[in-house]
Amino acid sequence: MRQRGGVSVETGLPLVLSDFLDYLSSVKSHSKNTVKEYSYDLISFLKFIRLRKENLKDISFHEINIESIDAKYLDSITLQDMYAYIAFKDRVDSNGSAAKFRKVASIRAFYKYLYEKIKVVSNNPSYELEYPKLDKRLPIYLTLNDATKLLETVETEKNVFLKKRDFAIMMVFLNCGLRLSELVSLDVDSIHDDNSASVVGKGNKERIIFLNESTIAAINDYLTIRPAESLINDKDKKALFLSQQNNRISNRAVQHMIEKRVKEAGLSSDYTVHKLRHTAATLMYKYGDVDILTLKEVLGHSNVATTQIYTHLDNEIIKKATESNPLSNFNLKDEEK
Image: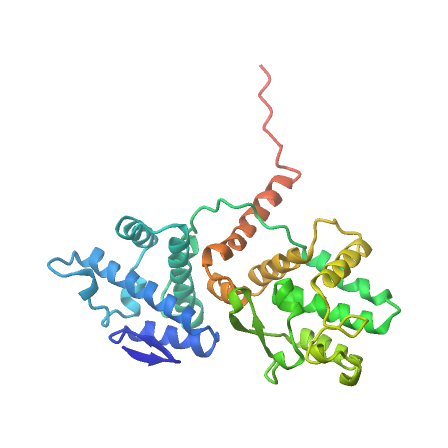
């Protein structure tokens, strides 16, 4: 074992896999746990491929060496091989949907890197590698147009404090996908100079998120009119978002504000605070070129199965779009007899 970005990984990795893990750590800024997950899944995948293609016998799965695997070898791997691996892990390890989903996500991310980033393979069969069937209902979320309408509601707000505070809160929700409790617990010093923020999530687990320029600008604009510390209650002096009574804003106050803004935007009352989290995740996945394991880290999910629901949105939207085509009910008339 050796260290990679603070993560212990196996030695004897193919150079291209080693480079991919470096890319995840240094360029994509994935957490240690996420890099480990990719590493374990892809090592297992490549061992299976050698077992399958070379009909290896008299050797345990753990002992299969993958160090010699190069780009040419990876280019020979087919979609059929990938599905065979998922089936193999299902038989051997009795993988549930979450484990199978993570393996599919790892393979897809690896081959996207090989094909689109470093261009060492001639095709990407993983494009057609399906995620396990999802049983959960699709999340309710705002479209990009509806999200814009919601943000625009503050433009008519006459109270400058509420205008800037509410806009900053909505920008954080819609760009970062925080839970309500996570947003309320933010302190001024939670925001760092490198535009990252420390967020305390479920189970008191801390994670780092990154804020885009528009969100940082909204927060900084709000901070210019945030009451001076001398006016804030002692226990709430560090709180980022304050109420008009100069206390840390409460969960209910945020909920009430969002309900008010949703109504002003002429949107359905179904769009609650948590639906803004769904919206952020959906927009990141649809427009941000974000893979599912990255999205898992951003949202603070402990299990990728919780995140997988967002990967099924595109197919659902495509299906509905196809069905709405005005020619969808066009049929060839029977010939007259």
